Image 1: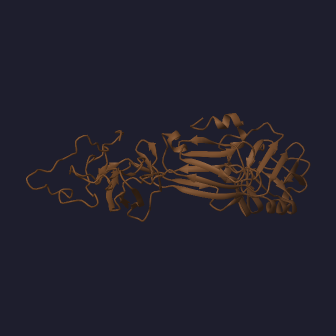
Image 2: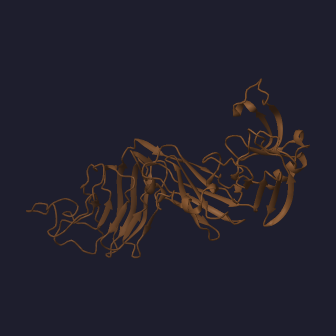
Image 3: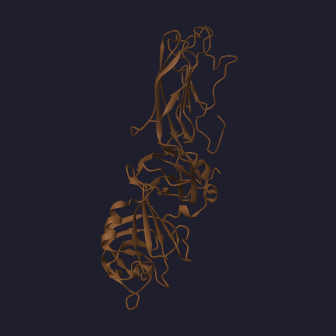
Amino acid sequence: MRKRGLAVAGICAMLVVAAGCSDSEAGNPPAGGSQSSSTPGASTTPGASTTTSNSPSADPAAATVTVTPAKNASAVRPDQPVKVVTSSGTLSDITVSDGDGGKVSGTFNDSKSEWTSLPQLKPSTTYTVAGSAQGSDGKTVQISSTFKTLAASARLKASVAPLDGETVGVAMPIQIYWNNPVKDRAAVEKRLSVKTSVPVEGSWHWVSSKQVNYRPKDYWPAGTKITVNIATQGVNAGNGVWGSASRQIDFAIGKSVISKVDVKKHTMTVTINGKLARTIPITAGKDGFTTRSGVKVIMEKYRTKRMDARTVGIQPGDPEYYDIHDVQFAQRVTSSGEFIHGAPWSSGSQGSENVSHGCVGMSLKDGAWYFAQTLRGDPVVVTGTTRGMESGNGWTDWNQSWTAYKAGSALA
């Protein structure tokens, strides 16, 4: 094993567990002789525990098993695979388990003479390797070995949107938030995968050292089933941060609901599964509170929402101050406070002028209908103003060209 990073204690420890051994094979030297420490011409695997025979007459059909890492090794790197190899016969029932009942996945080669785990160990964890090997002589060797992984300075864990089992809109980006900064983004990104029920071209894009997103080139096809695998257990994220857990998220895409707001024309058109469903009169931001143009994504939905102007820096006493406790059918599209909602107080302006503080307002009837059609992740494309979307002010992944978005991958 090539040495990388921390040294492994007890790296060359030897474990004798050969089947059908004589007294000399079990460790007792034959009468009138001394026990040999190695067989001439034989080699062992560094960092491995190996069954071996010290008798020149040892049966070559007996199973000789090598386990890597070595028995009782400590400070083993979590990104090192566990290997179990037999020189004769086949392996069976190989398990690598921690003290909490967790098991490390692995596979046999075609002849079942070798078993290799995924390089996904937890830091600061004691593992037990168990199983058996049957030599071509028909005799069985029981395998038992333990080792401990190194301690991490910090552990990497992920929070994910969308939620497991959620149905979302066609513009929903996959968003992974890390609890600690990732220095080696490429190593972590290699552990991420997205599987779709229909072919979809997509890319990861690093927003920061603590967030990576994924979006397709075009909107998700309606009805797509998606599985996100975050196989970061055991990954070296850099600066002493090691992945301590893996996750799988399954979600689905609902029907296609694409909304287009034309601020100059004071209308919003809603297309459902490719067909125009409704044109809604709206009002948008007035002078000084211009609604942002760009591709927005519905982030949150509230049947009733309190809207207090203090949250956007307008204080009581200011002529522009407002505090409405029961705004109905409110759907957030920016982090800074733009919503689409019912606005009965501006009914006389809807379809003709812009009088809001940046939100898109409509009648309660239209608001109720629109609220019933949408999901988190549905796109709202706003045009007709000179004020653009700021990166990160909401789910802004769609405001970059596909070329620019792909360039944000650590593996680009």
